[in-house]
Image 1 (cartoon, one colour):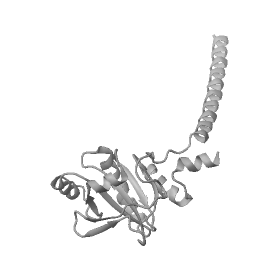
Image 2 (cartoon, helix red, strand yellow):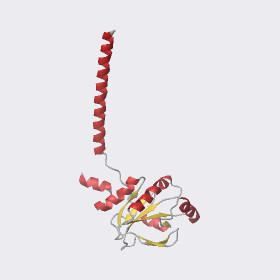
Image 3 (tube, one colour):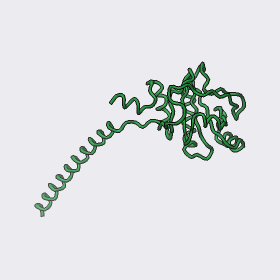
Image 4 (cartoon, rainbow, N blue to C red):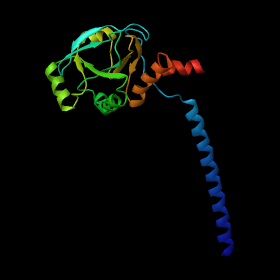
Length: 197
């Protein structure tokens, strides 16, 4: 009886040590994968004005009232144009992120919400979503000038009126990758990673 207990205890310890080695090997592989997989920035589509080009200039009226100049050179702040739709669930998910970015980056950045379509529908969305702190413009011409085809889409325009970064954004990380691209002086985070490789 005691021999069986000793044998089972030895087998148990062998299994535990084998599992420990397997966990360590998997942890090492996860670390290697983490190093190989680069952060995913905003997906830049090859449509519309290119990064580095001067932005088209628009003088528009905000839903909240007042006029707004988009893309004008000589602004004191950069502008983040965020194209959205009241029916886009990802756009709605990013609204708290935009509110946070607006508060944290207020010294150098103005966040502008942009869309097109039925004004009453957008006015209702603007009111229900509590977006009164944002300029919200409706302009088909604005979306056409930047050739926005998918939402949510963001364009970062520098103080000099040049497009600094742009792309399809589905998360906070992708939005912030536009700021990183501007700071690094590249079109996208992927371009920077390619330059480093």
